Amino acid sequence: MRLTLRVWRQKNADAEGAMSTYEVDGISPTCPSWRCSTPSTRN
Image: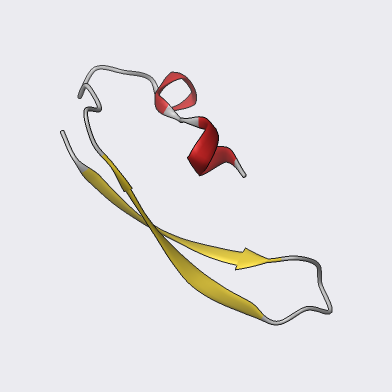
């Protein structure tokens, strides 16, 4: 399964923020979300 994640990124409460898009491929539909995350999506 391929997921497209749109995540609001902001360094801190005073900084400008923006939406970032992440493509994640190869996710099993039965995988719990905490185990399916990759290092690139946890930052």
